[in-house]
Image (tube, rainbow, N blue to C red; front, side, top):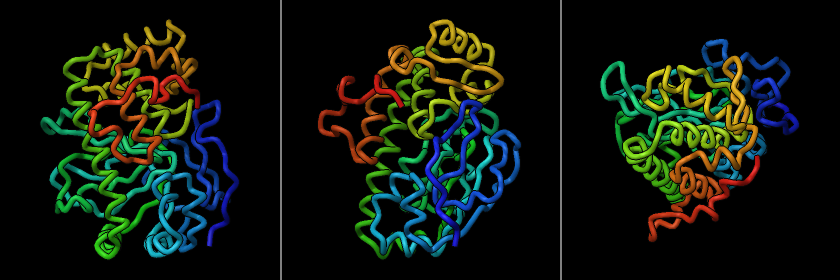
Length: 299
């Protein structure tokens, strides 16, 4: 059984993401840009390992639920850019990110796609399974490297079918992901590239629980469905304004409040849902007031 590591910041000043609590850290973490296959760090059936992992969804589960899921789980490192599922393909595993982030991408064709949602420590990659779909409607790719808990999909589906409370919680997560995808579709059409980049950087910071994180320029372009040269231009504008620093593939959010002012309002409902644990945010009104979403707060 792995030893529970002490809690540490998700990223240090160099942008290297640390190991999560609940994972055996006897071996050094791989580089977030080494492009390696997932590295299995440990397996566990101890609910305390899940609770220490910093995944907010796992923390909402009961000890009995964690015990059952833990029998099918393993902690592993995900490399940036790695494909976890493909459009039209099955999802063989369920992922509960700790400090990695996973992008959901709508594919226009084999070459082009647009990021429509981002999953981090607030949620889970499992929508085809608990949504009742045999295959994935979106591609899933690791956006920023880090640690995750991974569970066998068949075992997870069995647990969901037997547990109405777990199913209800996952329905809330699915609602939040669908709501985010809907907002991003409209955002892409109506908001400027700079505003969308600022919004995605804030979202990554929220979902990875980090002020500093690795993100290549090409990954930004893929994320936004834009040309690399255009993304380079708007990222330079954000740097000149003093809201971020960007050097050798590392993003550092220097002034979060300024970056929030540069971002479009689409970030506000997403952050509110994150803080509510994935529950629908002001669903009746259909929007969330900007002052209530915490955009100006610091990490």
